Image (cartoon, rainbow, N blue to C red; front, side, top):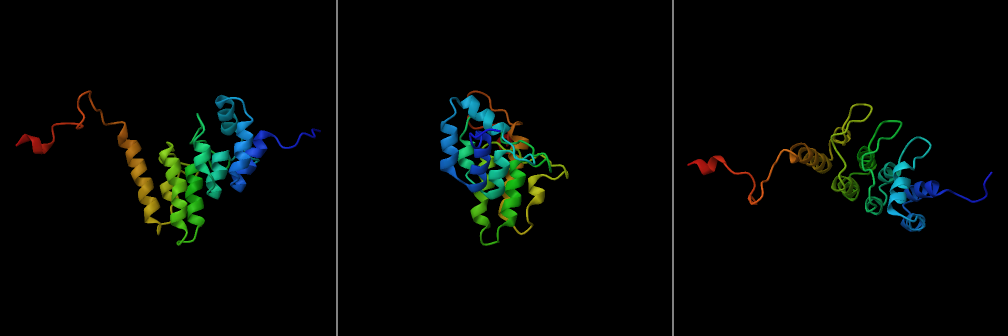
Length: 174
């Protein structure tokens, strides 16, 4: 039996649970390379299969600090529900009172800005937008915009020298 104390994985998960940025910074600063930090963060799971991002999103914790790390996987699936961190963020926001919801929206926004895919379905075949409390129209709109942007974003081709975007609109044909 080891007397060394908690492992870096255990410390990272606990820091995510407690929203303890100084503890997270301390453990990450002790790791010699960005590659090893990414490996730790991408592979750290709790007993039920939640990654550090799932835990942070579930508590509305310091996602920005985690998302600043190079090569962090933003769409890992948890073992139990096959949720992404964005699913967890929506569940967290739903748990807030209506007067507190605006303070929870940045949790989802940070994940979306980092590249989280709102089109991924969980074990129940639900996308994050389908978990949103129907009264929370702002969050639903944010997720729908993100989904639309990801769906059509790859379809637009801009050629060199074509800064104004695609040409040939109906208004040009008069």
